Picture (cartoon, rainbow, N blue to C red):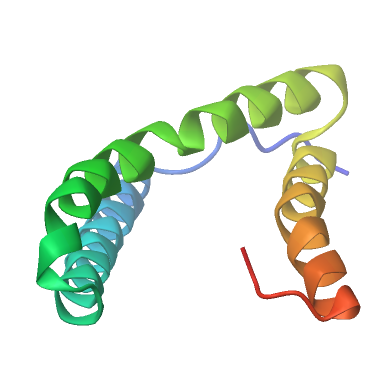
Length: 101
């Protein structure tokens, strides 16, 4: 397999990063809208405060795991291990019949 790490256009990378940023913005708006519509008014304050903290802080351990695994193995194995780390708990909850968490 060829090493393609130096190939590509920085413009493409910037465009893809912009696309991901836009998708994250849409995700945040949808998440906040769901919180505003589904949560009783007396509980919105704490949840409205906690939602951005969770959304901004939760990915950090995943980034650390992805970088560590990629540096020890390959980026492909890092992606697979990250996916398994995210989906395995949900699948086990589903298998046991628990509510998703």
